[in-house]
Length: 552
Image 1 (cartoon, rainbow, N blue to C red):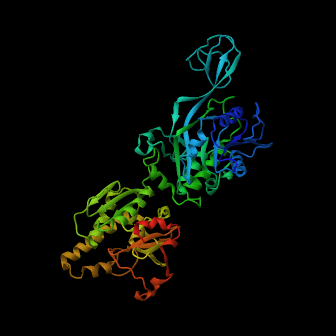
Image 2 (cartoon, rainbow, N blue to C red):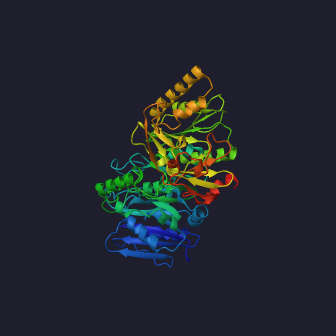
Image 3 (cartoon, one colour):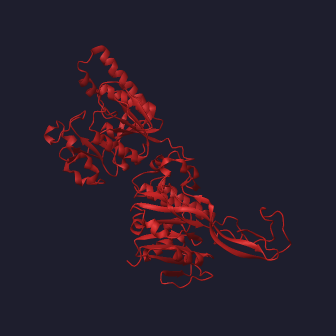
């Protein structure tokens, strides 16, 4: 490859585009080229000839998204950086960005406002900050439209072309309408303090990533229209696909804002309907699950950055329950995986532990009744509408948490589960695998059920003692809504769903229930339907190295 980086500049009526191109060429220190798309018009002054500058001209506008996609197809570089045609860059921006990036990241330099020019009165020499063409001379420090300094009506533009170093932004987000917002308060969080730190979204004026990663994210969605929602699209795609959007504070770009209207507004007509259409498509993609490459949903993203202003997401949460007797390597791997999901977690344990937003500690001995009480305690401590049951020896795939119950009175079970033998790495999958560890249900429904479940078991103990207790509990059943025996707790019903990729149920010497690895051990052969054996390196959606903690 001749170039490591292609800087892509879509330019439609961009009067400062030639300055932007020149600045990029002068500030780059690596093997960097510029691909500029003149989208519907040439510009004045023209871009100077340079061996590292490629110009593409369209007589009729194709739109900013299509222009960026076209330039990304032309590029043969390892990385691409999209830049608006009214920006300047930090010296050596390219090598600084390329030095700190992972393949599934989209990286944003720190952002400054660009002081592009001043207006100067030809008569008295008074100057003031950029804006639309003036009609009178302003007093220094006065707001436009008030006091005049002189009666001149002749003015000239004086180029400044420098960042406003007192106007720096490092973190951005979008609100519940998916509208771009600055997020200055995020810098107070611990995770925002490193030089390379996460950001939920970006402005859309400047972003950098691997070129092949760009196409993994499907590029920019041209059906959304020319402009609007670009930062939301990139931020959501980055995070929901399992990647990240990061800010690199070691370098910066400066962007000129044209917000005063008139001849200092948007350089071409923008319909309110076009912007509304882009936002509608963005909602369909990311809030309604319309993007098929997402392994997370929007709830996951909001929980990842929670609290997010304007997003009071109390829809989904996790209860994690453990007897604290599990091999710590397994326990820590499961906890790490759950933390990566981003949902609120309440843990319930028989020893005090620092996991989740709250820990419910019960001083009880391990057993079925204790497990029921642990689940009930965690349910009461959580405050979300729906809850996922998560056990200490199950690795949950992110796609498991994309599910949302349709009926508040139904128990839902994720049927996509692979069992793994801790000692051998042997795997087993069947078509019928309704387990408590795969439950998602309305929290109020669960609280009512487990309150009654605990009462029923305690009543049995009071009347019969320990004798026959385990047999009685098995008749009750562990999975709510899955049988019609007379001993059932209530008349609840259940349904199943299948996540895109399976959860991994780790089978070990401490499991509360045994695993039958042979079909012949099942009295009812219907539970062996779809019987599929395999190995740990062939589980869809998982990599073998994710199970290194097992030592297989």
